[in-house]
Image 1 (cartoon, rainbow, N blue to C red):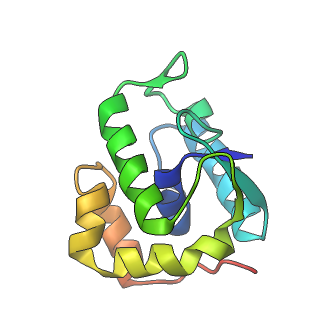
Image 2: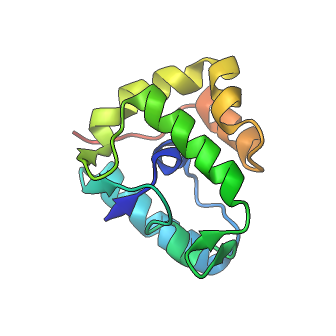
Length: 131
């Protein structure tokens, strides 16, 4: 599985809502696999989440500049290197630390349309990630 850095944060807080039914089905499958201990390769660019996203236009996001900025910030803050293999569990503590600081989280994800929902999930933490 391939995952871009900012999607690590998305997976940690994903609750089954998304852009479209096909996106939700794909994201739910990916989130379940990663939360259950699956591993992924970090990539810089379109990944397996992007595959079913309506904003993906031939491997490039309609908001490419924004997602690259989010990827860069998430990669730096989580210590993620493209090409390296990780488990969600390995990065979840760093992700939760980042997202528990609303200012830091907003710096990475503040212009995301899902930011409000993400903050709700963080404030009502119920998602479990296995080792």
